[in-house]
Amino acid sequence: MNHYDYLFVGAGLFSATMANEAKKRGKSCLIIEKRDHIAGNIYTENVEGINFHKYGAHIFHTDSKKIWDYVNEFAEFNRYTNSPIANFNGALYNLPFNMNTFNKIWPDVITPEQAEKRIAEQASEMKGKTPQNLEEQAISLVGRDIYERLIQGYTEKQWGRKCTELPASIIKRLPVRLIFDNNYFNDAYQGIPVGGYTQIVEKMLEGCDIELNTDFFDDKKKWLSIANKVIYTGTIDRFFDYSEGELEYRSLRFESEVLDKKNFQGNAVVNYTDSKTPYTRIIEHKHFEFGNQPKTIITREYPATWKQGDEPYYAVNDERNTALYEKYKALATKQDKVIFGGRLGMYRYFDMDDTIAAALETAEKLF
Image 1 (cartoon, rainbow, N blue to C red):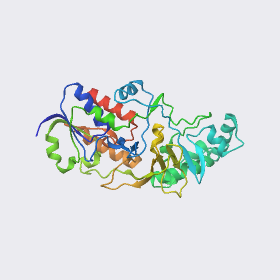
Image 2: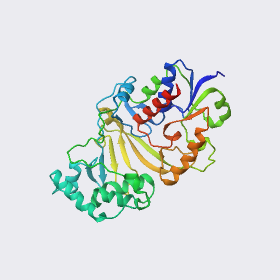
Image 3: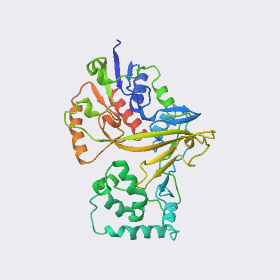
């Protein structure tokens, strides 16, 4: 088997960005991926003429012109603006919290001044108190009405715990806009790649050797010896055989179906913020690219408790896990040959622009 300058464990966006930078410098690269496709969780495939986001919604957004210009080298982006809807027991509300939301909750609230006053009145029950949990923190920021309709149920489903059992630090602040603006992101640049995300990773990995359906841990010793440097983007605790203990993650389960209708919900993303609905949101994929196909595809997203063997989607960055990660990070710094990257290797949530930025920074230091 060939010997490479770099081995990348995982074919997601972090690896692809770094591999693209390595190729520019004439380095030989091998990418191994345990799934049967590249592009990790941003993988899209064409189903019924619709670009289907297999692992949930991914909307590219950034304030960095450098990152925006970089990603536009690999795809053309449309003008999609993320404007999710919240469904609470059949009533629909605009997100993020803005004047449209406030008027729907409180019909007598018409002006920004009235909205600001109503929120302050609602939050006054926490006056003089230091929030001890997420529920108290949310109420101190936006009041009880917004908390109970648009935060509580969704958050408890997402994390699998009562809001009173979650740390206040999870929501240090909440977006409150005293304008009529349903654009979820404040970033200057946002959109969806025309034709889906997979093409971006394909272009980034051109010229690299790729082995799919290949698990690094089936022959860890072999893969560590095959290259001068290893870029590892899997879970950091597994790399070290859970020697310090098991980090906690949240997982997701997706239920997708093709429907014989043109339009199911009229929006790409609808969040279900009540506690009884078992899923957190429904994605209708065609609306990311303004599709008018005769059929549509929807995906229901169910948060799930993670266990070994499941796909880890979100790091649980509470006090215990953060302290545990620091122990693994200390072990990682002692590795001369292996570099840990991405959301799992660095145990943190990354938006796509954050992923690219972190990969470019790592590449710059390495090369």
